[in-house]
Image 1: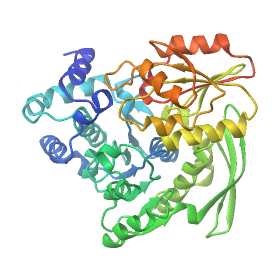
Image 2 (image 1 turned 90 degrees about the horizontal axis):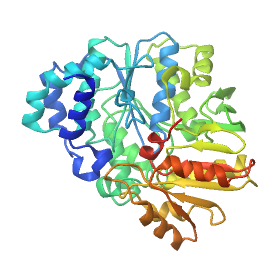
Image 3 (image 1 turned 90 degrees about the vertical axis):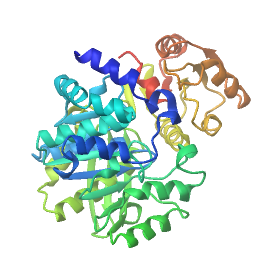
Image 4 (image 1 turned 45 degrees about the vertical axis):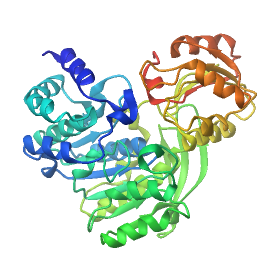
Length: 430
């Protein structure tokens, strides 16, 4: 098979959560264990950092990878889903996995794949681990796919675990309460391995404490150790001051990830960096600041408050759940408080759609659309649901004509916000 045939095979033969939803989810680690065993248990051959959370885990993963790469470490990065190219999921020092490795791994595991029928995610996790081991990475930053305890990535034994936050998402799989969701995310906490908790809620804090105590894992609650102030946001960057309240040290940072929510992720990253220093990693302050100011260039991260143009301003953001849309609205109201809003929005069927729609402003203009995947909620259905909340607009078969319509209707001072689904952002032409 050539590369395109290989990718077609992976998409067509393996159940893919991002396309079909819950039917592709495997609630145990057996397939991943068997796949990794077949290729020599590559996950045991490199150091790793494991990152879970409802929101922010992708950005946090990319920030840490940028810092480690800039510090001179050969750095692997595994994230999901991808926006444009499958190979975005597996990177080495910011470069995507070679097509040839994808072909060879798929072929050498094909017989086992057809015997055990893993999910798309299970196979790509094993592929990433095999790639990182073959490249002898110094460290790999591994983002969970869904949850933590039963996530395919959870066969690793990392040097550090990070849980960014807990919110309402994937309740049909992870549980119908925040403590239940926290329990699943806390499943990445390992014996004697330090864990960073980016944000906690009153009902989730004890879940983390109990798990960390059971595993004898040192636990760091970021919101108790770091404070952010003096936030300034432009179309291209975010500047802020972060104070380590334990050490009484304040530092200024400039991020090229300019979403307001990145200030919280930054604190988690700085807490993690402090732990890595204690573990023997050599990372100086100049390296950290340069890396954080150039994450997009270093790791290729896209879709996080990505400003495509100004006058009118067009922003892409992968926000797709209640917490993510809350952050979008907070950013809009802080940076563009009195400007007209146009929302190009599409969602998938298994999200808490009403919880998202109730957060959106009734005085904005809406352009309802959907990604071209089976999981997508039809634009007409989204339009009908939105009408219940007083949100009005037309339907479009594709995100790009929807953006074009918004540009034609928008005044120069308007903001066109494209959001609601990672897969929708992936279909935007830019």
